[in-house]
Length: 331
Image (cartoon, rainbow, N blue to C red; front, side, top):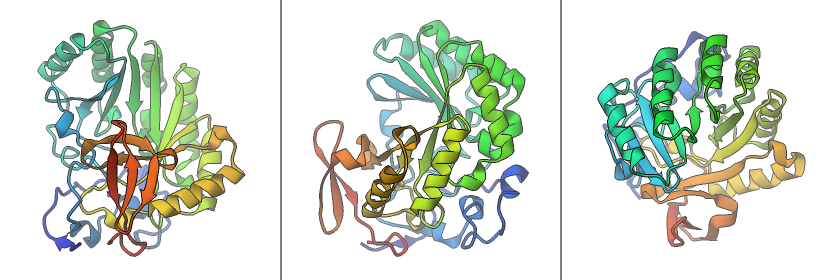
């Protein structure tokens, strides 16, 4: 397949001082922190199967800000802004240029839909980052959702404990803890991100009765070795965070240089399984192309072909994820 170089959905550049301080070099080729926020020319290279919406959000958009992909849960895009813009972002069609904060009318449209969909039991607040909103805005959103169904399980998906730990204040934790069934899902990719300030932020959430999970993206040159992942997952557990998912890189436009082969991912999981207990071991998963759904790789992989991995999807059908080489992500 032939790569092209040209315009893609360009992410804004932005990084918090707190995250930038974790980098020991501003060179993304040399530092695993800098590599996550410093733009490079590699972002301009788009492979034929890469898109700005690789997990199919727009395919399952039921209102302007509500994505209903899975039967029992829905995703509410509450803000398109992030405190730091990850260069491997899979939601590049929305992040940084998706219309800012959710409006009152957009929230009402989403709640109207939810009121007619009793099969939905879980709501994920994402974007962008929900904690880019004020405490009051976030409280209003959660309160309105709980009016639709007070039994909703709500996940707040955020990188703020990594990017700006001071955002997780006592008052924020208290507000979130005033609602039932709130979970925080954070995102850390490298052990250096587990700062003392992050641990304070996590303790505040836990003290307010909010369980904390982590999802990590497997990234070339950042965490694609067993020692780094072991240190990361052990550190998370010590901080009171359960490693939840280790994600295979999505087929987002301009991100091939970040992706690791699935063979390497499986090899890493086998090594980690010999080192870590189940408490510290996440599920290695992939969002199948074109919105076909999320699956655990190790139990869903049917076969490896010359140019693709063939996985069993949630629909029971076979789905292909491109098999890329270790050099630059190109087949």
